[in-house]
Image (cartoon, rainbow, N blue to C red; front, side, top):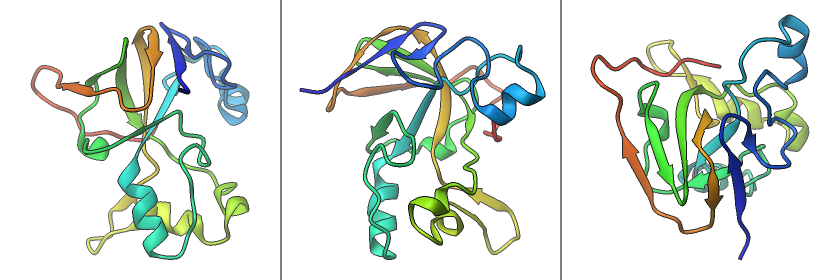
Amino acid sequence: MPSITLVEGIGVSGDAHAGTTVQHRSRVARDPSAPNLRQVHLIHGELFEHLDEVGFNVEPGSLGDNITTRGVDLLELPVGTRLRIGEATVIVTGLRNPCRQIDDLQPGLMKRLVSKDDDGHVRRLAGVMGIVARGGVVRPGDPIAVELPPLPHHPLTTV
């Protein structure tokens, strides 16, 4: 059975984005000492079903996601939510802001992941990012416990 190992304060063991400071090229160019708030990328599995319904064949992992969830409304969680998954705990830091390279996977995909709603607000559907608060092994089918932070809650913004 496949699994991933989350390392406290670092991210996914062996992942290119693992580290205490930013790892993404554009972010390193701006400030290489900035904390890495993007150690773990989680996507709701329901997104893959939605994309399939509108003609895109996207599999878990193909958008850079490390963990695929089911039944958790990731996009509506407040900043600081703790997700206990398997042996590990991930603290949600914000929304993933996908880059235009997504269209290299399938032309037009970016417009399905970032769009505007009827009120003109930008909707980002490409999942959430988090940091590893407690390391451990995560396996397919592990339950996810959601622990909301103390009030007041702050909505997710891009990180």
